[in-house]
Length: 276
Ligand SMILES: Nc1ncnc2c1ncn2[C@@H]1O[C@H](COP(=O)(O)OP(=O)(O)OP(=O)(O)O)[C@@H](O)[C@H]1O
Image (cartoon, rainbow, N blue to C red; front, side, top):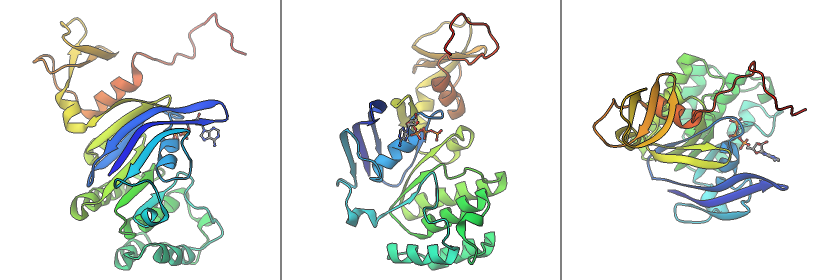
């Protein structure tokens, strides 16, 4: 569904994406995970053609992006709404025009359940309501591909749980594809099929969640290691191996293991290096 191949992107002379490569299959939920400033939003913006990569190739449904293709893609950008003075009703009107298969019945269910005030301007919605309203539009769009930048940001835990289930059903029942970025590694295991861990503009590791769990083990410090050591967190070591050692990790342990890679932030330790 999406092929991102060796994509590079710089802002002025500052390289932000460095040979980003991953593949998203049709009907799966694919998560981009990574620390602040890793390049997740920039990657998504390149995919939905808001930014042009300096080099590399992006294909969606085996095609380069075009106006025709964009009708099959619904995007929830990081900064949510462009026209802040528009009301909910005005946004709905635009989305119905943009997406010929817009499902008004689905949108109305969101409207009733979350009690959006459709006459209020978007800028006056609470942070969580903005995210929810945007999600209602994207899910009702019936688009073949949803691109969602931090879709659960600012949502309370109960609504977050509902939304994750709705997204899961959107992919499973309708056979649609979702790519999202998130910091919520605790909940990603529930809904994602595949993932890419991005740090400093590079893909550290991409895989299906099932295969990642199958090919890693957690060992206690001192145990004999057979395989590639990814990192050690507290008293445990994450190892890439299929040997019958240690125990299987959960997805949270894998992603934290890759993200930490022995880098710990210790602001109160004295250092001889003076930066400013
Ligand atoms: N328009 C721009 N001009 C200059 N630098 C930019 C621009 N957009 C993004 N960057 C830089 O690119 C890097 C990656 O930013 P990006 O928003 O993609 O990260 P992210 O992984 O989505 O982070 P977060 O999780 O904090 O949202 C950051 O260093 C950011 O400052």
